[in-house]
Image (tube, rainbow, N blue to C red; front, side, top):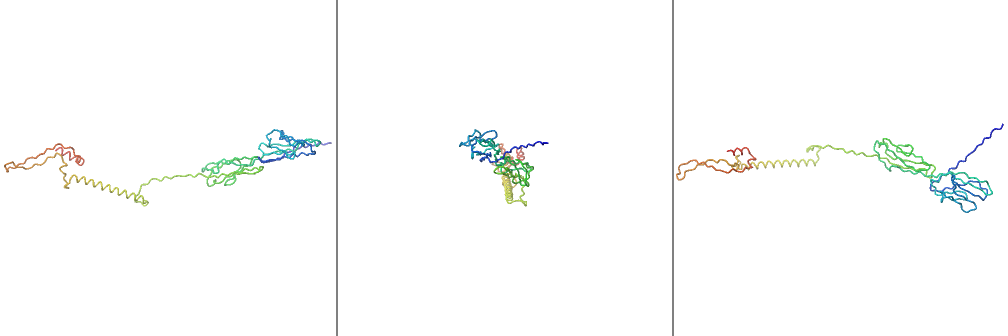
Length: 318
């Protein structure tokens, strides 16, 4: 009995070649050459990049986005200068010998153009937070391949990802430096970091002191208040003395003799007393002759009306 044959097929896995953007890379053509005369083509996927015949001095380049950045090293190896992110792809060489081995391809090269991580914090170098609020810290990372992002704060690891959220932040626990680190093991620079310092707003409360009555003789009276009280007392005393003197002056005008009887000039249209007279040429008989003097109605005197209006009206009636 003949057992069936087992066929095993293998698929070549393209070699990964990592190189930093902006630099140059050399892709070798690992075909086994047996003769000195051959033609070689370089491809990126299905796109031909160049053709070279070994007896010519220079290769012929096809028009592609790589034009001007390609060259051939040792008549077989492809050199790409000033690498760009769009240069990623599967590269391989195809060889045809004249009088030698049958045509064949070299092994595939999978080119990956890398970009070292760069970190940009979306908040400023110093971030201010209010006590009890939620704070989101975010960093933007440029990296190829994608970087692994981690966060570390004053209390240790905070997790991974482009953002971290701090809930109910408190000055005693959350004040400090927070660092975002991006790591890419395939790039020239493996990692990059950015930090932000979290501080808290200072709440200023203004206390209003109620007004107090000034106690001129209290134990807490300062020197300035005591002087002010003394000055006020002197002014009040001076005012009282001034008023008293004015009253006395007004009273003395009413009775200049000081006997308590008002001056006659203060009373208008008052009947005069009777006088004794003798008859002319006799010298003996005496009799009383009323001596009445008529005065025209006087103008109202403001002095007496203001001081004693009742007395003034009574005298006018008489």
